[in-house]
Figure 1 (cartoon, each protein chain N blue to C red):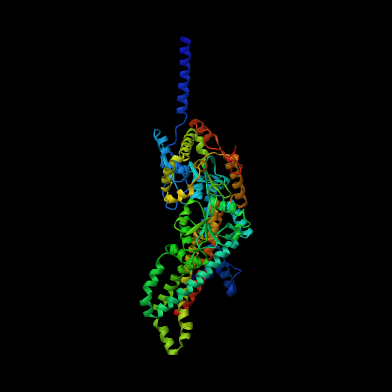
Figure 2 (cartoon, rainbow over the protein chains, first blue to last red; figure 1 turned 90 degrees about the horizontal axis):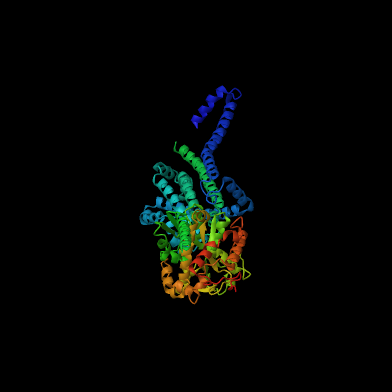
Length: 287
Length: 353
């Protein structure tokens, strides 16, 4: 932040309309806005190059049109899917699964992480087993889960919950174990009740690790959801993609790939923003 | 005498030149690539006539002298994967289900249907303890089939005999191995499939509630032996030789004396032999493995095109006659003297008189 402010200040001397404190604030806003625009523009360079290469490959017919559809066709398909309501519906189904799966998985993971963090005995008894179970990749569990939970919603929710469990368990666990002892000293001095200790000391101290865990959980959960929807499903964005492949409409596949990527990016950026905020808080708190 | 000698010498010379020209007219490709639908076990063997061509090495023998390599693919992704291989130019011939082949052609794949691979019954197997005895009982039940394959269309045809629609069922798109585990663990109620699911009946998990066995009733599965148009254009004689080998194998497979050997050949796919025995029991092999592109084939393709258009599986339809090329098998049948061996069927699936 200070570097930015300095940069803004230096520029303010050369820009006459922006003088004084007001002018400086305006410049900083302008600069920050532009910085954001600049970041977006920079981020679009690679997609633009890919798009150009893609168009070129289609024009030169490097691949059969059934395999590599033209960008314009993918765009038409994408807007058709949006307008017809197919895409919003399938996406909605997927989002709901993800939300339920994350709520359960992250909730349980967090609770377990805190429990293991606070109780060394619980950790000693269950820690290794829980970690071993969750370190087997979700897809490794799939055949067994299919037999246990069937092929319905339960299967998807369980798989996502399983995937989201570990990131939310590990982070807070370590945060508790590495928490500065001075926090506990203060709690003892103030004679805080157990509930107040959890609310006022522990939870704020855990926030950054929860945010980091959530970011991992969402991105992993999203990937697993798409995979399981491709294998066993009757709805959802992954299913739409598989349907596109089976009906030999690669434009549908490409359109869903784009949507899956964009949604994943959106999640990631959203949580990153949240993570930065909590990290800032912890930075201030540590000073 | 002299003139006769001169005449016959002249004729012989012409014949020699013609034969030299016809032999030298085409250099066969260095490799011929063929594919058929894969099996759950991932074995490099197939069923139907193509399975016979493969197992008895008919093409390997035919092209031995030319040094042509024969490559086989039996992708587990079945029909849809075969379409992708055709589009990528990785395939010259394939025998596969009618629905994916129609979808492929509808999507603009340049293939030609040069023979039928015959007809196969479609089965609907329900869990033994499920209260399902007829198709109408499938309402709101969990049904599994592989989407994009012939069974999707079969289900549509079967349902059309009742008042049910696809949306009245819960349809799960699963691969064969997953179908079996979901079925045996009670998570799906019924499967639509071919002889591979008869194993579930044998192992006492399920019962057949509908089949087109012994008939050509709605839902009967049929398939096509297709060639890539580019290949046929570039190598017409090789295409003819492949088609002739296919017809010769079809003749072998249609002979009841070879029934036991056929079961052995098909069991190489990993599907239990008993499933084929049950599937083909009392059926006329000549009828099941009929390679003719008859009225029945044409009208079935037409139905298939209409279905794929309605189901939005393809965006553009096509005329069956633009896809079908009978010249190769007609020539092969004449050459081999098999005229009249197989009977043509009419659009309704009855022997055409």
